[in-house]
Length: 88
Image 1 (cartoon, rainbow, N blue to C red):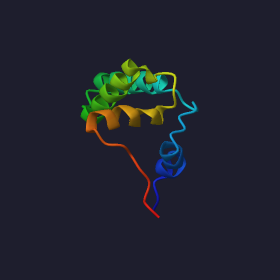
Image 2 (cartoon, rainbow, N blue to C red):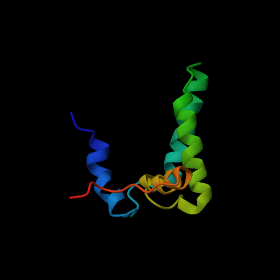
Image 3 (cartoon, rainbow, N blue to C red):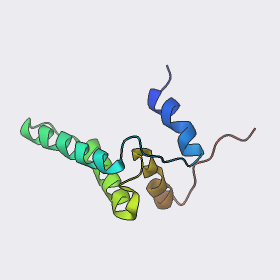
Image 4 (cartoon, one colour):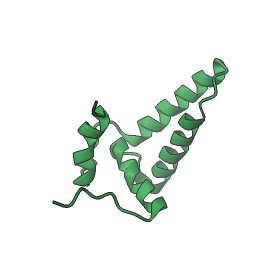
């Protein structure tokens, strides 16, 4: 099958359109709530923790008010690579 999130956000990322539908700062908050629930239930969530760290670092770079897919800017900076579409 297809990945719905990639289908929905992929074109916007390639066009560098980070108009806010769901702010990155809210993703950080929600990931924190998920981690708290995991702690309460004694369920380890290491990938969620890493995601929160990445989104949190992106927020520190001033991306908190942009759409959560703007995290790609931070990931590109870390990787020293830019996301590009396929050449036609």
